Image (cartoon, helix red, strand yellow):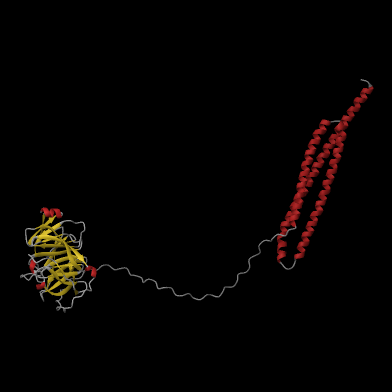
Length: 463
């Protein structure tokens, strides 16, 4: 190799070495600038945070100062000094940013000078620096915008925090007393244990006959009978005297019972069709009954025990009880109803169970109301109507109706609930043979009749 060639090679090596050294120097400077840039960003963050902290600490004080009448000017002086300090710091940061830009300009010129040595290395370095510079410019612009926004909002006064609660006021004057409340319900003592029933007292002497009074129509209008209509023959019996009955209380019981004038056997028919066919069962009621004034009520057969001043009823268990009626006519042919040879006449209506009999004091017609549960008399009513004027009798809706001696017409009526006569009369039948029985049933409001061996039904027509 010749000397000129060596010189050229040496020069080339020297240039390459210088380029390498220059590139190394540029890298070192770039690292330094990056470090300075990071320091600058850290300072910007500190300034921003300190400004925000001061702002948050001073805003309540400034708001409290605004509410006070004294001390308003120092707050705004402090606000102005703080804003001024922020502006000075901003200027210093801007100067540092300008220096960084100048150094970046120098770097660019040096890079252009070394472009001849390594274009490929320069292009790669330039691209990286351009990318980094673009991000730095974007970040610096963002920081400046945040600083401007913070400074702008720091000039706006904000409302302060809520103050402490005031002292409690004094109690007011007490109001007037209200009106007294209504009386409460009276307390009740719990009932004591039920005592033993006392002994039954002796029957008192009958009172004197009552004075005769004029009939009136003060009874309940709906309970006065106007007439009997639609008579219907059911069947014909073999005897002149007797009683045919249905239960006057139990609605669904269609059985029929038939009692002769004097016997202790009672015939029972399952229905009216069995009655018409004469198909029956026989029941022994223990004692003999007499007359045509019997009744079946609520499952019991009530009848006059023959030869005694008593009535009896027979349970389905064949148990018998009797109730003695004092001062009553019950023998020696002193009948209550001579046409049917009856001493005691039992009846049932809407008010319960009744007993019609004749007094042995004045032979007037008496009526006793019975309590079925205790089988006792609850009250007596003296109608003062003579028994010798009566042909037959029945009770409907609390009113006693009595026929004349020929049983053709109802000629006397007495309100048992009010204790006085009522002015009611109506026709019953044409003159004929013996009328053995008249009995009203509140269950169907029909009148049951045994007339000269014929058993009939009449519809009761009330006013």
